[in-house]
Length: 255
DNA sequence: ATGTCACCTGGTAGGTGA
Image (cartoon, rainbow, N blue to C red; front, side, top):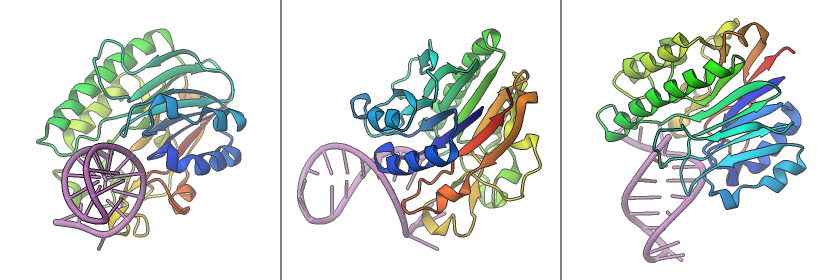
């Protein structure tokens, strides 16, 4: 079973690339972030024609998430129960016996901003939600755009990023707290090439210079960990015409 | 600090968010 995550940065713009990528990569399930579509605009017909079921949860202009899968997802939950949130950032469902939580974590803008305080509250709520889901679903993956680079080796120039969001000790502490629940960063279960990132700023030739961060992750539960046979960041999609600023990430699970 | 991209409103440019 192949599971994946991709921040598409507007599904309206990226739909042709998504369909191409589904056809070549053949994931069994994929969580999308930043669809930027209200629910009435979601391109479910095109996605179903490509052989995928879809669950989606969006809003105007910003955020928006979706869960695509070859077989139908069950027990779908939108956003974090009990956490009042105007923003569409989480979609959860069970596919082939695996609980998938697809998340678009708050960016946070700047460390001294209201948005960063919201990011901290949001991550605390996510942790509680993941803990409650883990209590009833041992086979669980939390995947998405975390907007956190867990370690300095996930940052092209750690010194240049000091004081900015995505790399702060406070954000990294939240990543560690998720690990403390028994979640494992799939990417680091394997030998990986150095300087492998999942996001590059559109500005200043970020991708061409590989000035990136690894902020898109697939975390797996203790029960799922021994089943992970690979985790790959698909840089090729960042080289396409009109790319998303994020590359897709996928992990292969044995049966 | 910001060379890009996507979206909105409201208008053929400017603001916001990432």
